[in-house]
Image (tube, rainbow, N blue to C red):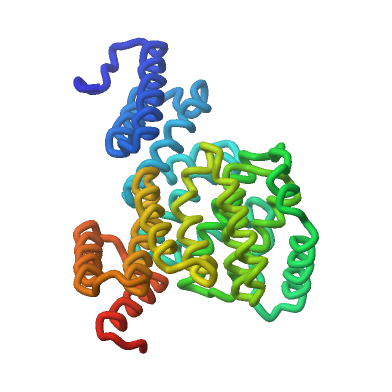
Length: 355
């Protein structure tokens, strides 16, 4: 790679070098070395013979482009994600093959503040996957479906959920549920009234199809919806099940978001605030380890508030808040409504009053 692409190499050798870059990129990504991983993936694309990139080497080229887009998304590099998505969209042979890149584009648009464009792309993905668009709270059919799910969960034992079989469509389920889970972020800005539908759909898919890597997040998000419905004991029970399901390695990448949802929406009603704060700090660390920067920084903001409410000195909380805000500014990280709320809570606490 140091010498650039040598076009004098025959096609077979160039394809082999591209495959080595894919392997090296995967290893770097597993170690959270995302900058290095992106360089490997982009070099792999360059080594792939251009005339065969989307014909003879279609699968290999698609894998490199998707891997590069996912890694660029973790680095919040919208320019690279957009360019890769456009190339994939122009060359793939099916809508299914471009969904992964479109999802990366959705996340990158959101992280750069283009919230409504992010929502538009996310809805386009749902339509391609033959999913109905979310309904608002107040829709009679949604109210009936939520009531039915509450009854189902009340009548289903914990061990029945823990012992569910793996989904036969785990890969597809993980992608669809990932889109839905990210929509919960987007809808906090656009239309929170649609989040109950989104979380309901996530747990329906999980209970109908079986467990996948993202199933713990489906349970955690619906636990938040249950808390909003004043089903507090059921919400806490489901949130604990979500954390129990995190035992598999594949599910660990969702641990930061799960911690955020359960702590901020459910656990504070039952557990000591010091314990909630500790969970949020662990969620922050887990998010940094797996590259979930958005969940990591939001966990940390909620940690500051809960640490103060739990008895931590105001001066230390103030210092942590200022450091967090400065880091976000340095890295061009946007603060959206759920973070703004946390910030306002922090300001209120600093003034020793609630507003």
